Length: 227
Image (cartoon, rainbow, N blue to C red; front, side, top):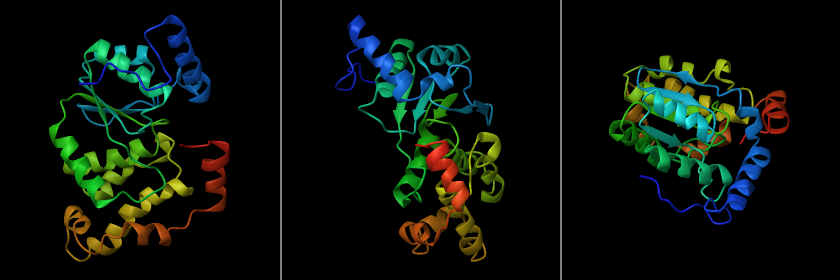
């Protein structure tokens, strides 16, 4: 269960501290953009992927049966994290921090950790990053493969423009990770997990080989300013 202590700098115990936290969340975390748009998609009957939820949205998800909230952002000293921890504590939701990056090939430990996560959490669950597009996307691929038994080729549909994922930008390294498996591991007769555990799996090498398109990087890094 989540801790009751808010991150340093965000005191939710006083009206002025709570106001300061919400102000930071509203503007610095661009939360005003998420008041009317959650980028929410149930990808199975037990898991919904979204962008960063407001506390009142978490209450609505609790009313719909959600038991666990998975934060993929990290941000342990940020206003969003303080508000999310506080809301989960008050609502009786289990909050799990599982930090994922959107411009790196996931490490072997991170992939194996994702499998353990999906095997052990209480469902129904909500999984989110900031925009619900990239980190939520790669984790949804892993969920669909490890828990639902989809092939990697099928599960890669979770990294799609319909979820606002832009594969042509630097965030396309997430797609490239799975494409390398299809080019390298699958023809060798390896399951995805066997490939990840083999010497073939080289996150640093894959990142070095990946090339984003200029217009895609402009979109994700400048216009959308993706986290």
